[in-house]
Image (cartoon, rainbow, N blue to C red):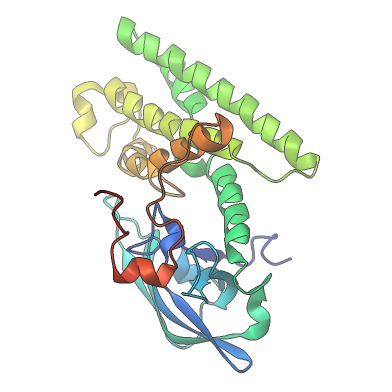
Length: 297
């Protein structure tokens, strides 16, 4: 209940330096030791880890099976001995992301969620909900000015006579309302008890690029003053516009890159052929030791 009430902050201990877009290649290991699991590894891009009470951790519990099959899902206390949180400072100057190093971290056995080696299906549900969450706001993952904010500002300042900027403003308006309808469809599905599916990837791709369109257009509306950090569009106060412009490139990377989302859309929505999996039929350990066998003669 504390999590739902916003009293506790949790984080996702998912991505690793060698397992980002291909998350199932993660190498953080969890080994059972009596009534505990001992975890060793490194996570990266962990948002708000420095404030979190718990982390959702996925770790490899069986290296002798295919990469998706040997992953388990844990609840990790972020104040456990052996956890080292190191900040990653973004170009905005903020500290949202972190590296997290886990050295002989002991997690109680009851903190395992679901079955041993059954964590990948749970991770997919978590990622689906993350994509919905990150695309719920108007821009910047719900943390910054929206398209409506920009359009209202342009109206109050007398509009613009530039035909290209006017056309882009119309496109922005259309994007914002299409996304609103998609969000309403997601809410309707959730009320019916349905989990987010591959359609969440459509929503995330559109929302992330929409956020970048907002901030890029805001900078262009500022004209030469766009080079200054204390000027907003059309001479308005900065009010988060400059910070938003610097943060916007992260939108199409965080929570699953736009390229990964498009692969999901192509394969699971449009029914296109899957990418060739050169690791098919090999255990995770085998893929770490040697390259896949060649089919050439």
